[in-house]
Amino acid sequence: MQRIEKALKLVADEIGANYSYPSGEFLIDDFNSGVSFRNPFFGDSPKPLKFAFGTQKELDVWLAQTKDKYPLMWLVYPVKESHNNNAQAFYTYPNARLVFAMNNNASDLVQIRLQTTRFVLDQIIEVLEKLMRNSHFNKFIKIDKNINIEQTFEPNYSVNKQKNGGQIDIWDAIVYDCNIHLYANCVPVPQPIEEPK
Image 1: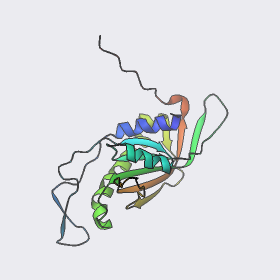
Image 2 (image 1 turned 90 degrees about the vertical axis):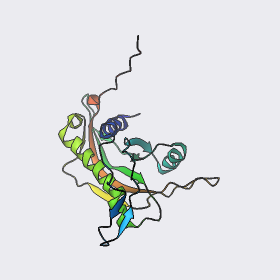
Image 3 (image 1 turned 90 degrees about the horizontal axis):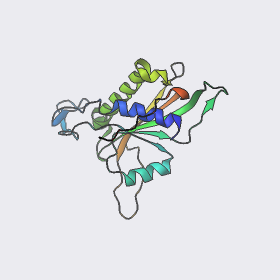
């Protein structure tokens, strides 16, 4: 795993399950007064954010092979890197793309998705940005504050088709485009787990 991937994995691990689902078995539709709909997350507990990376083809393979996969933060390849040539290298990843995804039902309307999957994804991104600004992470990884961040909400983002009649993953995503800066020599190294004696 390369430096940027290790750093983003540490951030995803820190985010963990630090978000909430909408509460209640039924939710009132914000856009259709007096109408309610069933909360798809009712009775569920938040699961830790998963982190993975690769091309679109690799994403399809990863989705087909992975059971516990949502919520997901995916670093989209290819990834461009630029840096200066000195011992204290400062790496920049211009136009880095992260895709944050939650599974959903294909038949749900966008207005319902705004109150369910987007409700969750917005919280995850809010925690990500807070970590990048106000914690020990900004000592080794930062999102550029001087360049605009672009976010696009993509209902039914997934287009992967699994062979042999397999299930197609249906998920909503926020595509998050930003410039990431990394101090490579400062990325913490995970400590090995000691065996009990």
